Length: 67
Image 1 (cartoon, rainbow, N blue to C red):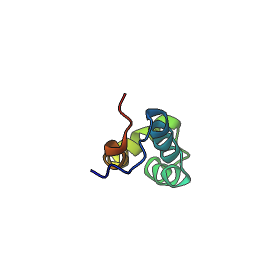
Image 2: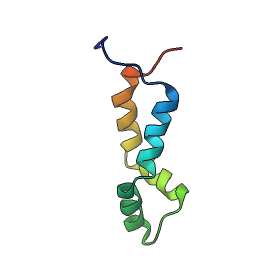
Image 3: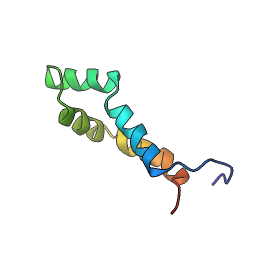
Image 4: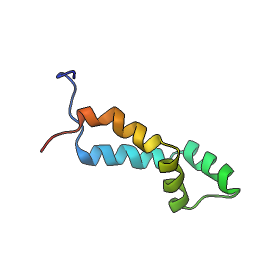
């Protein structure tokens, strides 16, 4: 593990996840899936189901700030 990486606080990690969930791209692909403008719950469900949430977690987990 690179010890020179800046830790990512939990609040920042959650902001990154939220920003990705609400992104125009996720809104578009979710809308394509549900054939209409998606609800926030559908955005979250699609984001998690697509594996993107886990991918971001794997990328940032080594840098998560330890309390």
